[in-house]
Length: 194
Length: 194
DNA sequence: TATAGCATGTAATTAGTTACATGATTAA
DNA sequence: TTAATCATGTAACTAATTACATGCTATA
Image (cartoon, rainbow over all chains, first blue to last red):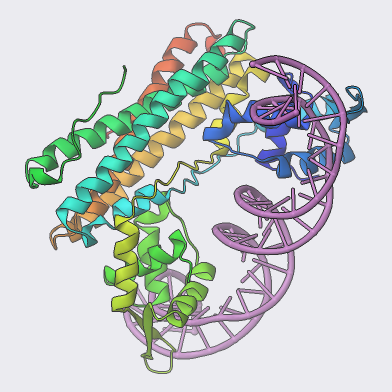
């Protein structure tokens, strides 16, 4: 029974209290989505496979006429999750981002278009940072009161990193704006941290 | 003819002077690999598809008995590349990282194992930062002298970001080490920036 | 003379996304 | 009563990795 990160995501979410496939997906959307997105079309087959392997149990638990299954992690599933968390296996970065790829090739377009490209990347990082801080972090802080600390840690690391990238690109923009005709500006830029 | 990021990677590398499939892959390995890895099994079919669409031309150019084809980007291909670089389309982050996913679920293991996990992530970021600065950036600086600036910019952004993450995690480690039994330490940690 | 690097491709598999398909319950 | 949310699943497709398969050329 070979387990993928997507499988551990499901196990981990069950362990944190999500009990249906739908709930797992919802929980992932407000927490792990930024570094491990998933979809219902992955969650349901994954749950079935894990049940098959005895890592989770399923119990039908309909709400009125609406079908519904509650899943729970088994001791065997818990063991697998812990082994994964403890394993020394280095997981190399496999970052894939079209935005950065575009930036890499930006020399092909005139300075004005380059500036636009940089600005768009900066805005994206800025929005991502704000989103993590305003939407993701509060939910994580909620469960911190229950003693679950790492979702918050990860949210803070994410927000701070996006802010760092945003600031980095902004400095480059400022540097660049001196050299490029000002007619190309799109107006006032708003600051982060409202 | 719908083009994927992998197609633009090929077009962009051809434009920067790589002429064979093999050379494109080699160039990607010392530059774009960190944010858009690729493989020969993608490059060759992609070149064929691009030739089919008239975005590149192919010319057989064997070295002795060894088969070899030189490719070149056509005006139509160049146009497509520029349109991609100029397009306003926001490319959302699709970050996927097993290491961060593990960190997210770290509450499941005892503090000692948590510290190990954080340490491993910090080391990974540290190594990635050093690698970008020592192996990737020098190659990028080479072509900067020819007026190609963005590969260097991207390398610096990458190196600085990995350093930022490494420092961030190190601060957390230090904070944590006070609370955890010191018997679990793995000895002296080496500093970045040798 | 042997090994590293150049060079090109295909096949099989795995992982992931999007679209399809259905229907109940709850709150405005 | 109607829209949002809960809830479950399958099918088709796309993207990407790994393994397979071959063979030449230059250099140590």
